[in-house]
Length: 395
Image (cartoon, rainbow, N blue to C red; front, side, top):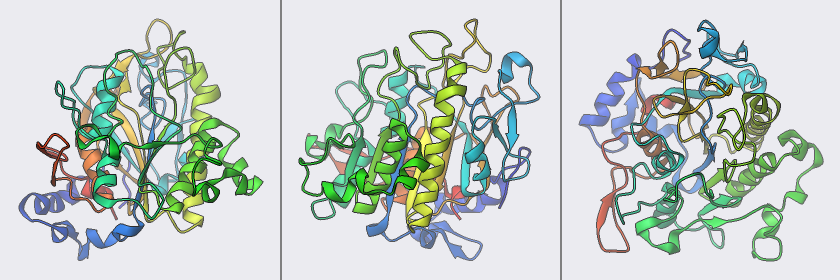
């Protein structure tokens, strides 16, 4: 079902969510005569690529522009139509706009934790906040524990490495936490793997045709997205790509407007075009190679940005609402889930929590997000608490 600005796919899916609450197992996802569980690949084929948009993209300058809002809200950029009537993106995402019919956009992501990078990153990676000494595992570490490696291929890889300092010296939720370090991700930077990994030949970027490499763009993020495709093709279950590893004194999504942070002008010149080209190429490449239906691609930051432009011409931290992109992995294209209010300050319809997004990634991998695991310390924990997968996102 295609959705536009004035309607989304929530109402027709209430029966599926009711089934999810009252039923159990795969049959709880049956809808319209078709089992949702049959719309995703078998466990051995499934993979997730999480594109962590470090710094927190502005919802207004990506997938939720407000062209009719006052200038102080809508910002300096125009909006453009997409391939789905009624759905508009920021003008600096033209390639993704043409591919909207393949995408599900969530416009009502939100959390009520502290408006710092680290809290949002914990929530996006693990589904919950760390509690004292209790550090919960990245969903990729859970996949490593439950699904295991494919021969010599590790189950969970982080490219190019973990997020560094973003302001507060607490966890970003990138490790195996209480599962134990044996399930931590393997961090790999393309080009540094040659000669160090027995299976590196299968993921060497130099084996890719020049035209393929060019499609992703001559950028570090473009190379990392291409590398992610090669990793899932080799058998990696979860690839987490950190678009940036810091927010200080470099271009990132953290658009406060002045150094040491990023300006909206740099969004236009660098951040948005880099993202647009690389992710569009990734989706095209996965589709052409027959891997898109079995690979869920998720792109999200840790929060959104303030609905009003600040005095420096940028936007500040705002966990009240933001947007996320999903594609592949059985996702139904051409739809919008949730809606923000008229100035993109809070959800106006179908709020979506980070835990629900994490539950969706678990479900796409064939892992029941309500499962309980025992940690290395002997204590058990539920993978995701009080959150269900976004069943309405799937075909």
